Image (cartoon, rainbow, N blue to C red):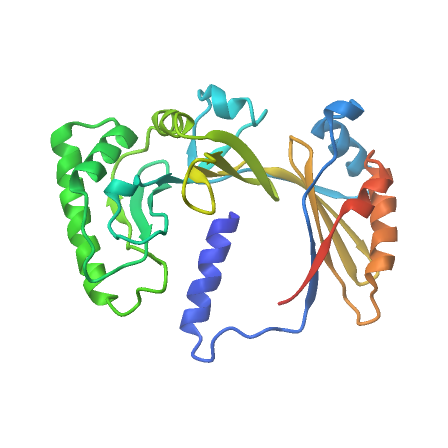
Length: 303
């Protein structure tokens, strides 16, 4: 099961339980993401997995769901491995927005192999308008379909949006993701990436566990994010697990050398300083510089 499904499952579970979600008192330490600089150190992910398998449990986690797009040169230059794309956001031009405020709006695609859901992110207002021609053009670009078919989808999507605006007329201060609309087509990721590349400069941001946000920045945009659009991508990763006493250490590292760590202590006397010592031994055992552990910043969660 991939991370997106886990998150969805958690949300559903919290909704079902009448008491809501509650914490179990289990403490996790989640680290920032660092780059171990494979190329500079003449390393590959295969080297790390070979070394790690001599000491620890090693699991290869592959990306699932989403859309594979191996023929997009711009993305292939960022990811030297297989990857899938889960979602795409495209900034709506100011003159095509539904509202008249200073907040960005995005045309959104949630991609799967057999179908796509399209959505729209904005702040609803009772006086919202809907640029049906723009949406039709984006649908045509995104799916390489006829004007007629794109127009029908855009008309139906507009009806959904206006219904949502009426239901949420009093929530103008909250950003709402409009209910997505099902389209039985796989998106043309290459066409969308080409569209975004004309509007911003690509920047790949690792989130950990093989997940990335590929953003297209444009400093001339009037919005704080300066993003002309983005893609949510997963490359898969190697999961290296070590249990020491009651504490579990998990190192997650992808093919590009982006690494993050999770620590789950099994006792109250655990200290992060001791955890760093254990991690340094792990790093040495898997062929990485132990000094990299000092670059990891940890946050603590109670789950």
